[in-house]
Amino acid sequence: MFSWDASINRVHQLAEKSTPARELLVFYATVLATQKEIYESLRTKRDWLPSGVLENDLSVLREHVPFFLKSVLSVAPPALVEQADARDELLFEYWENRSDKLFFPKAFLQPYAQWSVQSGVFSKHTSTPENRCPYCFGKPQLSVLRVTESGSESGNRHLLCATCLSSWEFRRVVCASCSEEHPFKLQYFKSDEYDHVRIETCESCKQYVKGIDLTRLGLAVPVVDDVATAALDLWAIEKGYAKIELNLVGL
Amino acid sequence: MEVSRRTFIKTTIVGGVGVSAFGFSLAPIYAQARGLKIDRTTETRSTCPYCSVSCGVIIHTIGDKAKNVTPQVVHVEGDPDHPINRGTLCPKGSSLEQEIMNERRLLKPQVRRPGSDHWEDISWDDAFNEIGRWVKKTRDETFVEKDEKGFTVNRCEGIGWIGGCTDTNELNYLAVKAMRSMGVCYFETQARV
Image (tube, rainbow over all chains, first blue to last red; front, side, top):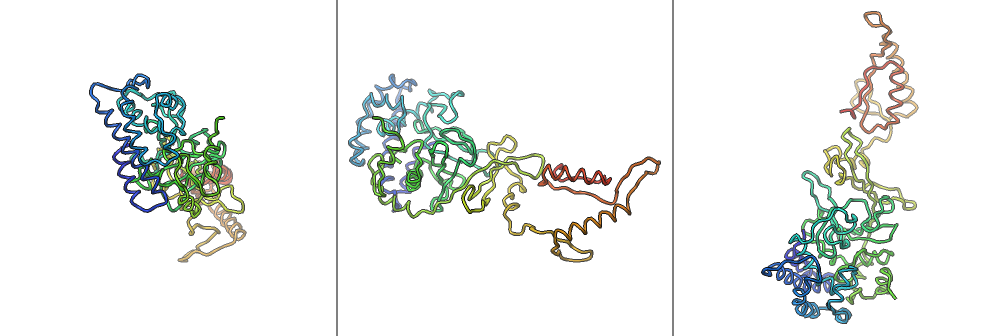
């Protein structure tokens, strides 16, 4: 289950090391802290709960836009500063299309989407395609292996939603994008440098999702370790694979 | 013009020095990526061969479908999606990788002579011939054509067969035909346990 505090602790822990991904981690630390403040503000707002309809909740959400933009723009690279825009139209566009190219709407709405799930407004649907979030219909950001069966050492696979940060069960040995099941079409790439992280590719759709194996490193936080292992994304891109969903640093 | 996903990502990384989709410099990360040693594995679902519970397993293999490379199993784990075991494995199933990869696997027939304290290598041909002679001798000496009540039973009571759980259906079929045709009654397999 996603935790803002665990994510913030992890990003600071990894950012303290002088790694090639340090610049990304420092930026992401600010994004997480900003998102957490928005989430807490929504969660503790008196006499208000999300309605489940973005249009109805915008008046509350807009109050946080200036703070969000100011925080993120203070650490954003110039190219991202040029894109700075969290107007209503863009928020609707993201909510409708869930495009990972729209950094500001995606980052801004994640706390709202998460609170909408946790408060019970977004309930779990049973008829959603297996590769989409059953709560908010978001795309999978990451694949996560964790043990859920007592006595087992094997990791059950979950997908983490790019929009609401919820996770749902998903089968092993299946493409998270096109549902390909032939084992020879599905390949797993990893490096000794990151024993708990792998690139899960599909030769049918040429897409990949990054897999975080919590059975190998229980202290990992998937969204943070995804950013920290950016080198694996570059490797996958050079090999011709496209990530199902870019993360908040654009990889 | 709508930019496709693959174009959007690839055009922002050119020649090893580029920026991410949101403008972060990727030069140091690209340098790291070039130095990574990447292993490729495949995962294949299968069934544990040991007992009739038939637990699901996932076999991790390096080198599948690669040219001039012999695929090698590197890990076997319980299949968490399998309804029977849900990822758990007993000690025998947990050591399946050893059954495949252990260097002490028997790769040739061996025989231990009566009173001997060690195993000796024996060729396949010699093993076939010796087994054939012993089977015929034992059957000839222990065959029971009629029981004590005079009924024709045609039993070979001096030979027993113990099968293993990794024996295939095809092998078991042949074993049943061969043994029953000789009159062998003591026929059992560990897989039934």
